[in-house]
Image (cartoon, rainbow, N blue to C red):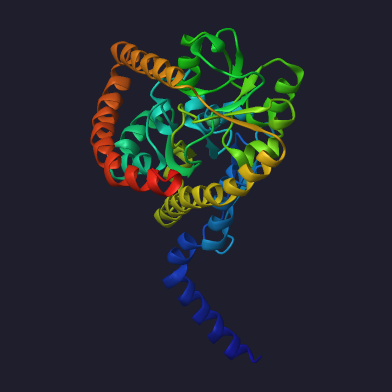
Length: 359
Ligand code: CA
């Protein structure tokens, strides 16, 4: 290249970078984050929700924004994800809000309350009602912003070594069950433990616990509970449609370009849909397979459900009397629930009853 041509091209390059430089720098910002989760890697449904977020963010930013996902216990204990996000040890987390009711009881609304919302009602409340707005008022107190990023649908009631024929049979039972469901079980005489997903099977096998709940047939079969407890109860009245959350440390969030914030919001919504699709497509075959292994399916007796519901609402009233923010969320949640039940109790209920049970 002749010297004059070289100078001309170099000058053009300088001009181009000064015009397009700032835009280029913003859209191409390179970011590396870590996301702690509460989940064992073996669960492609729930851990898969966190992986989907990382994969899609990578794709949508052409590899410029990369998030590394960690299983529960890898860098943060499974039930300490919120602590790590709050402190900025990690920029992001994927977990269930109700693991953190010890910090504030209103964390329960982010996931599920006993006798609360199904998947459909939960999403309606979170996205179009006041749910996400109220939850983010709470999360901001913990230096986080949160997005719904997964749902399991109505859960199973879990695995028991012995049959539960009455409320009396619950007394003295040692069970793994988190959230306000655990508080209700405690009021019914159960000794409650909260363990991360990967910690449950060893505890059940050793006899540290007599019973456990996790999610539903697909996950539960993978975790192997049927090998040590034969009775599989339903419905999981404490989790009619629990949401999992994608949390981001607020300082890390505020440093992101608006474009990357929009991408995170979008992929969280995608994870929220995809996880439900995964559970709904994988649970039917897993239930069939579990029945083939000799698992005994049982429905909780009506008196257990009634007693649990009574204790649940007594607990909610107590919490509302003690805590102002809890009361604010509870009143909104309760009003939404009442209207939702009127609607879902008509055609949705009738079609479900006829399709699934011929009634
Ligand atoms: Ca559960």
